[in-house]
Each structure stands twice: as structure tokens, then as C-alpha cells.
Amino acid sequence: MMTYHVGAAIGRPRTRTPRPYRANLALSLLSLKHLIVTAAVLLLCAGLCLGFMVSVSGGNGTPEGMRAFPYPYRSMLAICSDIDGTTPREFEDVHKFLNTLDGTEMGPGLGLDVADSFWMYMGSDAAGIADREGNGNEAVMTWFQGTTETVKNAHLIAYYFERGWIDTMHSYGDFSRLDKSDVVFTRMLAERALSALAERDVRPTVWVNHGNEANVQNFEVGNRRTYRQGARPGSDAYHADLTLPAGIKFVWFSDNDRRFGRRDILYPVTLADGQKVWGFRRYTPDWSTYELDRQLREAHLDACVKRELPVIVTQHFGGGYEYQPFGAAARQALQGLAERQNRGDILVARTSRLLEYLRVRDHLEFERSGSHVNILAVDDPQFGYDPNPSLDSLRGMTFYAEDMISAGISIGGEPLPEELLVKAVDETGRTTIGVAWFEADAKNYVWAAAELAR
Image (cartoon, rainbow, N blue to C red; front, side, top):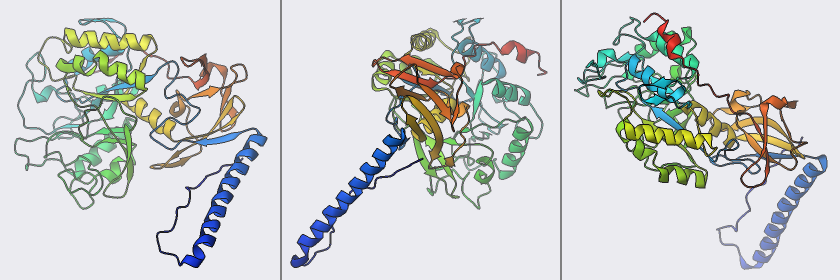
């Protein structure tokens, strides 16, 4: 096997060189450039003679020879909803409509892959109405009751996490306070929460910051000194040394973003304690269900398809006091999104799946032999070199091939069976072969949840 790297061209030195030696120096530099280019060509030819070529993508872009998204889609979209103000009933109403095909108060379900977030604690002293029954913060779905050890909705959160209706940790909870200096969160709460999550095998990979300056559990980029102290060693709120090893890969750092769709959703971050994560960007304007139709307007979606861009849309599904979580305009926008998925324009995926897809695609190492692709590793600059990527992490990876009949995909030299492959001719007229995306799951899990003790 041969892997090669071609360095950047060598530029002219900036220091002044005595005149008698300039010509010789120029000739030497030119010869060195020729030597580098010649070596690169020889390596390439050797690879071609052996029947393969090694490809490594460089990040924030589709590697040469790959489709940007799984066939037939030309964009991917995730709706990343913060759990603020969401009661168990609201949660179930929302996801029965979004995720299943069953009849609901809002019409037939859409069968979309949309996952939500969760809280461990409720530490806010703010007043407000959380649902149409007039309940306040005490009714919001949390693992524990308040900030105590008493278990509240742990069974529901663990259940829905396992079924894929929850995938994101909206920090450790709502610790927003009317007096922002009245800090409630401590490291001890993180230790208790992580112990409880491990017992139920709940291991989210996505973290989203929450709330005002009293939420000291939030993460901050690098060494910036702000109220966000979750990754600051020495702080009473420091917990990154516990939370990241528990599985967190992707963090939203509270940054607002007005660009709907971008190639650089992911960006590398080193935290104050030296740990590395992937930061990610979300489209944040109009982030209530009353404005969902503005987020999902045709011009936005058309642009993502045309430019082949992914997008993560921020939302707050809960917290409303009206009878239905989605109004008529929001329902129409969501139905339009479902139609776009059905006709192969936009793949709707839960946040964790979209982020993992981009992470792997942008750092995939593979080799070719004719129309056969052998996936070698994921060379991730944040989490290191992974020579044994899982099948789920490779879902949707799609390559261009010369010949459909002989096209195939192996992982570490082991061929994938035909039932895990998708072969097709895409909109460009080129032959593609890909690892099948996750099987659609529109099962109504609400009924089963009703059987659990509440």
C-alpha cells in the first residue's frame, strides 16, 4: 500500500542574497521543485500501476471522487430543537407528528428523522407557562426533580434516546436565574448526571449550550474568559474532563449564525483544558415554531439543493401554550420538507447523524482499484486516526465509479454485502456506489412509552 503527500512549493527566500550567488540559488530551487514534482508523479504512477489510488479528504469539503450526500440527495438538513419548556405530552405530540406516519391532531405524520434534546435538571427560578394546561417549569421533562437526586422523567428520556427521538444534551439543565450571579450549577451535579446516564447506557455525542450567564456549565471556545466555565480547570463548574470522555464529540458554543446552509458547519476547537472537540454551527434566526415557515421557506431550501449545502436549523418545539405545537404555516412548511425528501432533494437526518456524516466524509481515507473502493480509516484531526470505523459511521458514504457491474465497497479489505450497497446513476449521469443510509423508522413509539410507569 502506498500513501503519499506532496508538499507546498518552495518560495523565494526573503533574505537578501549577494549578487554572485543568486543565479546558482535560483537554479538550485528550480531543481528542487522539479525533484518534488517528479517524486510525486512517480508515486502516483506507482499507485496506478499497482491498480489503486489512495485518497484523503482535507476537511470542510467533499473529497474528490465522492458525492456530497448519499444518493439521490443533494442536501442534508437537521432540525436541532432545544428542550426548553417541553413537557412529556408536548414531546410526544411533536414527535408523533414529525417522526411517525400515524394520524395526529395536526394531520398525518411526516415520517422524518428528527431527534430532540434533553435536560438532567431544572434549576431555573423564572416563571412562565410551559404548556396548554398552564403548567410551569415544574412540568418540563427532566431526568431529575429540580436539582435533587429524586428521579422524575429518567425512564422517558432513556427510552426515547434508545429509539432515536432524543440525541442531544442541552447542557446539564436549565440553570437560568433572574439574578444571573445566583449560580446553582456545580461539578457535583455533573458527576451525578453522568453516573445516572451511564447506568442507562445513554451516551449522547452532541452538546448544545443553554441560557443566560447563570449557566456556568456551558462550554467556551479556547481560552476566552466568559461566564462559560465548563472547560475551565479550577472552576467549581469545571466538568469537561468528565463529560467529553463520556461521549461528547460535537458542541454548539452559543454562536448565532444567519447563514442558511454552509460547507463549514464543523470547525475544530481546543478547549481551555486542552481537550479537542468539533464545534458546529446552527441557523439561529426565527427559532420558534411560530416562525418555522420562515426558516424552511422555498428560497432557503432551493439554495441548499442548488449549492449542495448541509444545514442545521435551530428550533424550540416546546414551551407553547397553544393547543397544537405547530400552527398551519409551520405544518405546511414541514409537509413541504417531507415532500422534498420523498422526491430525493433533501435528506432529513437527526443532528447527531448529520454531524457524524460530515465528520467522517470530510476526513475519510480510502483507496480505489478500478470501480472498487476500499475504506481504510477516518483521519480525524480532533480525535485521531481511526483504522476501524464502524458501519454506522460510514452510512451514506457514496463514491463515483466507472462501472456499475464491478463496483463494490470494502471496509478494511472486507467486502460489504450487496444489501448494504446502493448503486445508481445520479443527476450528473455518473455511476455511483454507496453505503446504504440508515433504514427509515416511522414506528410510533409513543404507545409503547405509555406502558411505562410515569
